[in-house]
Amino acid sequence: MTRYIRSTLALTAASALAVTAPTALAFEPQGKVDCIAPSDPGGGWDFTCRSVGRLLEQQDKVSGNVQTTNMAGAGGGVAFAHTVSKRRQDESLIVAASTATTTRLAQKQFPGMNVDMVKWVAALGADYGIIAVRKDSPYNSLPELMDAVKKDPRAISFAGGSATGGWDHLKVLQTAEAAGVDKLKKIKYLSYNNGGEAITQILGGHITAFTGDISESVGFVESGDLKVLAVLSDKRLPEPLEDIPTAEEQGIDSVGANWRGFYMPGQVSDDAYQWWVQTLDQLYTTDAWQKVMKQNGLMPFHMSGDEFTAYVKEQIADIAKLSKDIGMTK
Image (tube, rainbow, N blue to C red; front, side):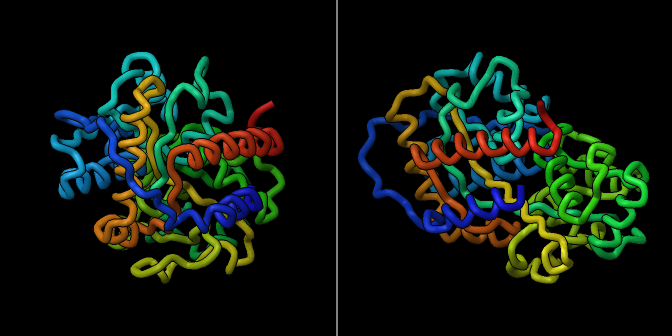
Protein backbone atom coordinates (compact mmCIF):
# COMPACT_ATOMS: atom_id res chain seq x y z
CA MET A 1 0.00 0.00 0.00
CA THR A 2 2.61 2.54 1.06
CA ARG A 3 4.89 1.70 -1.87
CA TYR A 4 2.02 2.19 -4.32
CA ILE A 5 0.96 5.56 -2.93
CA ARG A 6 4.52 6.84 -2.91
CA SER A 7 5.32 5.65 -6.43
CA THR A 8 2.21 7.11 -8.05
CA LEU A 9 2.80 10.50 -6.47
CA ALA A 10 6.42 10.44 -7.61
CA LEU A 11 5.43 9.53 -11.15
CA THR A 12 2.91 12.36 -11.33
CA ALA A 13 4.91 15.06 -9.55
CA ALA A 14 5.99 16.47 -12.89
CA SER A 15 2.36 16.97 -13.89
CA ALA A 16 1.61 19.16 -10.87
CA LEU A 17 2.28 22.33 -12.83
CA ALA A 18 1.42 21.10 -16.30
CA VAL A 19 -1.58 22.93 -17.76
CA THR A 20 -2.61 22.64 -21.38
CA ALA A 21 -3.11 25.79 -23.42
CA PRO A 22 -6.84 26.64 -23.66
CA THR A 23 -8.69 26.21 -26.93
CA ALA A 24 -11.90 27.95 -27.94
CA LEU A 25 -15.01 25.92 -27.16
CA ALA A 26 -18.64 26.57 -28.00
CA PHE A 27 -19.85 25.38 -24.60
CA GLU A 28 -20.29 27.38 -21.41
CA PRO A 29 -22.64 26.37 -18.56
CA GLN A 30 -25.75 28.53 -18.42
CA GLY A 31 -27.32 29.45 -15.10
CA LYS A 32 -26.71 27.53 -11.89
CA VAL A 33 -23.90 24.98 -11.62
CA ASP A 34 -24.45 22.07 -9.25
CA CYS A 35 -21.56 20.51 -7.35
CA ILE A 36 -22.50 17.31 -5.54
CA ALA A 37 -20.58 16.53 -2.36
CA PRO A 38 -21.22 12.81 -1.69
CA SER A 39 -21.31 13.44 2.08
CA ASP A 40 -22.97 15.53 4.74
CA PRO A 41 -21.52 19.02 5.37
CA GLY A 42 -18.13 19.04 7.06
CA GLY A 43 -16.11 16.43 5.17
CA GLY A 44 -13.43 16.52 2.49
CA TRP A 45 -15.84 16.24 -0.43
CA ASP A 46 -17.89 19.10 1.01
CA PHE A 47 -14.70 21.17 1.34
CA THR A 48 -13.79 20.39 -2.28
CA CYS A 49 -17.17 21.52 -3.65
CA ARG A 50 -17.50 24.65 -1.54
CA SER A 51 -13.95 25.94 -1.96
CA VAL A 52 -13.83 25.33 -5.73
CA GLY A 53 -17.40 26.61 -6.20
CA ARG A 54 -16.61 29.83 -4.36
CA LEU A 55 -13.56 30.51 -6.55
CA LEU A 56 -15.44 29.68 -9.78
CA GLU A 57 -17.91 32.41 -8.82
CA GLN A 58 -15.35 34.93 -7.58
CA GLN A 59 -13.21 34.63 -10.70
CA ASP A 60 -16.19 34.75 -13.09
CA LYS A 61 -15.46 31.32 -14.50
CA VAL A 62 -19.22 30.65 -14.47
CA SER A 63 -22.09 33.03 -15.22
CA GLY A 64 -24.39 31.75 -12.45
CA ASN A 65 -24.05 30.55 -8.89
CA VAL A 66 -22.36 27.28 -7.88
CA GLN A 67 -24.62 25.35 -5.52
CA THR A 68 -23.22 22.60 -3.31
CA THR A 69 -25.65 19.70 -2.91
CA ASN A 70 -24.84 17.26 -0.11
CA MET A 71 -25.76 13.68 -1.01
CA ALA A 72 -24.40 11.30 1.60
CA GLY A 73 -24.59 7.52 1.49
CA ALA A 74 -22.76 4.31 0.63
CA GLY A 75 -19.31 5.91 0.67
CA GLY A 76 -20.17 8.04 -2.37
CA GLY A 77 -22.32 5.36 -4.01
CA VAL A 78 -25.59 7.29 -3.71
CA ALA A 79 -24.12 10.29 -5.55
CA PHE A 80 -22.47 8.07 -8.17
CA ALA A 81 -25.75 6.24 -8.85
CA HIS A 82 -27.66 9.54 -8.99
CA THR A 83 -25.18 10.91 -11.53
CA VAL A 84 -25.24 7.89 -13.87
CA SER A 85 -28.98 7.24 -13.67
CA LYS A 86 -30.66 10.64 -13.36
CA ARG A 87 -28.13 13.26 -14.48
CA ARG A 88 -26.21 11.42 -17.18
CA GLN A 89 -26.36 14.35 -19.65
CA ASP A 90 -26.24 17.27 -17.20
CA GLU A 91 -23.40 19.49 -18.42
CA SER A 92 -23.68 21.86 -15.45
CA LEU A 93 -22.97 19.14 -12.90
CA ILE A 94 -19.65 18.23 -11.30
CA VAL A 95 -19.19 15.74 -8.46
CA ALA A 96 -16.44 15.85 -5.83
CA ALA A 97 -14.25 12.75 -5.79
CA SER A 98 -11.06 11.47 -4.22
CA THR A 99 -9.03 8.34 -3.57
CA ALA A 100 -11.99 7.27 -1.42
CA THR A 101 -14.07 7.13 -4.61
CA THR A 102 -11.58 4.97 -6.49
CA THR A 103 -11.23 2.72 -3.44
CA ARG A 104 -14.97 1.97 -3.45
CA LEU A 105 -14.91 1.35 -7.21
CA ALA A 106 -11.89 -0.92 -6.81
CA GLN A 107 -13.73 -2.97 -4.21
CA LYS A 108 -16.90 -3.12 -6.37
CA GLN A 109 -18.90 -1.35 -3.68
CA PHE A 110 -21.04 0.51 -6.24
CA PRO A 111 -23.16 -2.44 -7.49
CA GLY A 112 -23.70 -2.48 -11.24
CA MET A 113 -21.54 0.60 -11.77
CA ASN A 114 -17.97 1.12 -12.93
CA VAL A 115 -15.31 3.72 -13.69
CA ASP A 116 -16.39 4.19 -17.33
CA MET A 117 -19.90 5.40 -16.46
CA VAL A 118 -18.65 8.92 -15.65
CA LYS A 119 -16.05 11.29 -17.09
CA TRP A 120 -13.06 12.07 -14.88
CA VAL A 121 -12.30 15.80 -15.08
CA ALA A 122 -9.36 16.80 -12.89
CA ALA A 123 -7.48 16.48 -9.60
CA LEU A 124 -6.64 19.76 -7.86
CA GLY A 125 -4.39 18.73 -5.00
CA ALA A 126 -3.44 15.89 -2.70
CA ASP A 127 -4.72 15.68 0.85
CA TYR A 128 -2.58 13.67 3.26
CA GLY A 129 -4.05 11.36 5.86
CA ILE A 130 -3.70 11.86 9.60
CA ILE A 131 -4.15 9.82 12.77
CA ALA A 132 -5.41 12.04 15.60
CA VAL A 133 -6.87 11.86 19.11
CA ARG A 134 -8.66 14.34 21.38
CA LYS A 135 -6.50 16.88 23.19
CA ASP A 136 -6.63 15.13 26.57
CA SER A 137 -5.93 11.64 25.20
CA PRO A 138 -3.22 9.68 27.04
CA TYR A 139 -1.62 8.89 23.67
CA ASN A 140 1.05 11.38 22.62
CA SER A 141 2.69 9.60 19.69
CA LEU A 142 1.77 7.19 16.92
CA PRO A 143 3.98 4.37 18.31
CA GLU A 144 2.19 4.66 21.68
CA LEU A 145 -1.19 4.25 19.99
CA MET A 146 -0.01 1.35 17.84
CA ASP A 147 1.50 -0.40 20.86
CA ALA A 148 -1.94 -0.26 22.47
CA VAL A 149 -3.46 -1.75 19.30
CA LYS A 150 -0.91 -4.58 19.41
CA LYS A 151 -1.84 -5.40 23.00
CA ASP A 152 -5.58 -5.43 22.35
CA PRO A 153 -6.90 -4.46 18.87
CA ARG A 154 -10.49 -4.35 20.13
CA ALA A 155 -9.69 -1.88 22.93
CA ILE A 156 -8.77 0.91 20.53
CA SER A 157 -11.47 2.30 18.22
CA PHE A 158 -10.97 4.38 15.09
CA ALA A 159 -13.54 6.60 13.37
CA GLY A 160 -13.44 7.91 9.81
CA GLY A 161 -15.60 9.44 7.12
CA SER A 162 -15.39 6.57 4.64
CA ALA A 163 -17.33 3.32 4.67
CA THR A 164 -15.85 0.17 6.20
CA GLY A 165 -13.15 -1.02 3.82
CA GLY A 166 -12.88 2.49 2.38
CA TRP A 167 -9.91 4.82 2.21
CA ASP A 168 -9.98 6.05 5.82
CA HIS A 169 -10.20 2.44 7.02
CA LEU A 170 -7.37 1.32 4.72
CA LYS A 171 -5.12 4.10 6.08
CA VAL A 172 -5.47 2.63 9.57
CA LEU A 173 -4.78 -0.90 8.34
CA GLN A 174 -1.69 0.06 6.32
CA THR A 175 -0.33 2.09 9.27
CA ALA A 176 -0.98 -0.73 11.73
CA GLU A 177 0.64 -3.23 9.37
CA ALA A 178 3.72 -0.98 9.06
CA ALA A 179 3.83 -0.76 12.87
CA GLY A 180 3.91 -4.54 13.21
CA VAL A 181 0.29 -5.19 14.20
CA ASP A 182 -0.54 -8.74 13.11
CA LYS A 183 -4.30 -8.90 13.80
CA LEU A 184 -5.48 -6.32 11.28
CA LYS A 185 -8.97 -7.76 10.90
CA LYS A 186 -9.64 -7.29 14.62
CA ILE A 187 -9.00 -3.53 14.54
CA LYS A 188 -12.20 -1.68 15.43
CA TYR A 189 -13.27 0.88 12.81
CA LEU A 190 -16.52 2.87 12.83
CA SER A 191 -17.80 4.55 9.68
CA TYR A 192 -19.51 7.94 9.58
CA ASN A 193 -20.92 10.00 6.70
CA ASN A 194 -18.06 12.51 6.77
CA GLY A 195 -14.92 13.46 8.63
CA GLY A 196 -16.62 16.18 10.65
CA GLU A 197 -19.10 13.71 12.11
CA ALA A 198 -16.28 11.30 12.95
CA ILE A 199 -14.31 14.07 14.68
CA THR A 200 -17.37 14.92 16.78
CA GLN A 201 -17.32 11.34 18.08
CA ILE A 202 -13.65 11.69 19.02
CA LEU A 203 -14.20 14.99 20.83
CA GLY A 204 -17.15 13.47 22.69
CA GLY A 205 -14.91 10.72 24.03
CA HIS A 206 -16.85 7.94 22.33
CA ILE A 207 -14.00 6.84 20.00
CA THR A 208 -10.25 6.65 20.62
CA ALA A 209 -8.78 7.99 17.37
CA PHE A 210 -9.67 9.76 14.14
CA THR A 211 -8.51 8.61 10.72
CA GLY A 212 -9.08 11.11 7.94
CA ASP A 213 -7.44 13.84 5.91
CA ILE A 214 -5.83 17.04 7.06
CA SER A 215 -8.17 19.35 5.08
CA GLU A 216 -11.26 18.19 6.97
CA SER A 217 -9.63 18.64 10.36
CA VAL A 218 -7.58 21.85 10.11
CA GLY A 219 -10.06 23.89 12.17
CA PHE A 220 -10.03 21.34 15.01
CA VAL A 221 -6.22 21.15 14.89
CA GLU A 222 -5.83 24.93 15.02
CA SER A 223 -8.30 25.21 17.93
CA GLY A 224 -6.33 22.58 19.86
CA ASP A 225 -9.28 20.20 20.16
CA LEU A 226 -7.52 17.53 18.10
CA LYS A 227 -4.01 16.25 18.82
CA VAL A 228 -2.51 14.91 15.60
CA LEU A 229 -0.21 11.98 16.31
CA ALA A 230 1.03 11.72 12.72
CA VAL A 231 0.52 12.95 9.19
CA LEU A 232 0.89 10.20 6.57
CA SER A 233 3.20 12.12 4.24
CA ASP A 234 6.78 11.75 3.00
CA LYS A 235 7.77 14.99 4.70
CA ARG A 236 6.21 17.54 7.01
CA LEU A 237 3.46 19.76 5.66
CA PRO A 238 4.12 23.46 5.02
CA GLU A 239 3.08 26.26 7.38
CA PRO A 240 0.89 26.48 9.38
CA LEU A 241 0.99 22.68 9.84
CA GLU A 242 4.76 22.20 10.02
CA ASP A 243 4.73 21.05 13.66
CA ILE A 244 2.84 17.83 12.93
CA PRO A 245 5.26 14.85 12.87
CA THR A 246 5.13 12.31 10.06
CA ALA A 247 4.61 8.61 10.70
CA GLU A 248 7.95 7.92 9.02
CA GLU A 249 9.96 10.05 11.43
CA GLN A 250 8.38 8.03 14.26
CA GLY A 251 9.61 4.80 12.71
CA ILE A 252 6.37 3.74 10.99
CA ASP A 253 6.61 3.61 7.19
CA SER A 254 3.09 4.69 6.21
CA VAL A 255 2.25 7.26 3.54
CA GLY A 256 -1.32 7.90 2.41
CA ALA A 257 -2.22 10.66 -0.05
CA ASN A 258 -5.80 11.36 -1.07
CA TRP A 259 -6.21 13.31 -4.31
CA ARG A 260 -9.08 15.80 -4.45
CA GLY A 261 -10.94 16.34 -7.71
CA PHE A 262 -14.08 15.88 -9.78
CA TYR A 263 -15.98 13.68 -12.21
CA MET A 264 -19.05 14.56 -14.25
CA PRO A 265 -21.84 12.64 -16.02
CA GLY A 266 -20.69 10.17 -18.63
CA GLN A 267 -22.91 11.30 -21.50
CA VAL A 268 -22.08 15.00 -21.63
CA SER A 269 -20.76 16.45 -24.90
CA ASP A 270 -17.04 16.55 -25.63
CA ASP A 271 -17.16 20.35 -25.67
CA ALA A 272 -18.72 20.45 -22.20
CA TYR A 273 -16.17 18.00 -20.86
CA GLN A 274 -13.24 19.92 -22.37
CA TRP A 275 -14.62 23.21 -21.02
CA TRP A 276 -14.60 21.80 -17.49
CA VAL A 277 -11.12 20.32 -17.96
CA GLN A 278 -9.75 23.68 -19.16
CA THR A 279 -11.57 25.68 -16.51
CA LEU A 280 -10.26 23.55 -13.65
CA ASP A 281 -6.78 23.60 -15.22
CA GLN A 282 -6.91 27.41 -15.15
CA LEU A 283 -8.32 27.50 -11.61
CA TYR A 284 -5.48 25.32 -10.32
CA THR A 285 -2.85 27.88 -11.42
CA THR A 286 -4.50 30.88 -9.73
CA ASP A 287 -2.99 32.46 -6.64
CA ALA A 288 -6.38 32.15 -4.96
CA TRP A 289 -6.47 28.35 -5.30
CA GLN A 290 -2.83 27.98 -4.31
CA LYS A 291 -3.67 29.97 -1.14
CA VAL A 292 -6.64 27.67 -0.39
CA MET A 293 -4.35 24.66 -0.82
CA LYS A 294 -1.73 26.03 1.56
CA GLN A 295 -4.27 27.01 4.23
CA ASN A 296 -5.83 23.55 4.17
CA GLY A 297 -2.77 21.33 3.98
CA LEU A 298 -3.20 20.31 0.33
CA MET A 299 -0.03 19.47 -1.55
CA PRO A 300 0.61 20.15 -5.26
CA PHE A 301 -1.00 17.49 -7.44
CA HIS A 302 -2.71 18.22 -10.73
CA MET A 303 -3.92 16.03 -13.58
CA SER A 304 -6.86 16.40 -15.94
CA GLY A 305 -8.62 14.96 -18.98
CA ASP A 306 -7.23 11.81 -20.54
CA GLU A 307 -4.15 11.74 -18.30
CA PHE A 308 -6.31 11.89 -15.17
CA THR A 309 -8.67 9.22 -16.52
CA ALA A 310 -5.74 6.86 -17.13
CA TYR A 311 -4.40 7.57 -13.63
CA VAL A 312 -7.81 6.83 -12.03
CA LYS A 313 -8.06 3.50 -13.85
CA GLU A 314 -4.52 2.52 -12.84
CA GLN A 315 -5.22 3.45 -9.22
CA ILE A 316 -8.41 1.37 -9.19
CA ALA A 317 -6.54 -1.66 -10.50
CA ASP A 318 -3.78 -1.29 -7.89
CA ILE A 319 -6.15 -0.69 -4.95
CA ALA A 320 -8.18 -3.75 -6.01
CA LYS A 321 -5.00 -5.85 -5.76
CA LEU A 322 -4.02 -4.27 -2.44
CA SER A 323 -7.49 -4.78 -0.93
CA LYS A 324 -7.23 -8.44 -1.85
CA ASP A 325 -3.72 -8.74 -0.44
CA ILE A 326 -4.73 -7.45 3.03
CA GLY A 327 -7.94 -9.47 3.12
CA MET A 328 -10.49 -6.69 2.52
CA THR A 329 -11.82 -8.39 -0.63
CA LYS A 330 -11.70 -11.86 -2.10
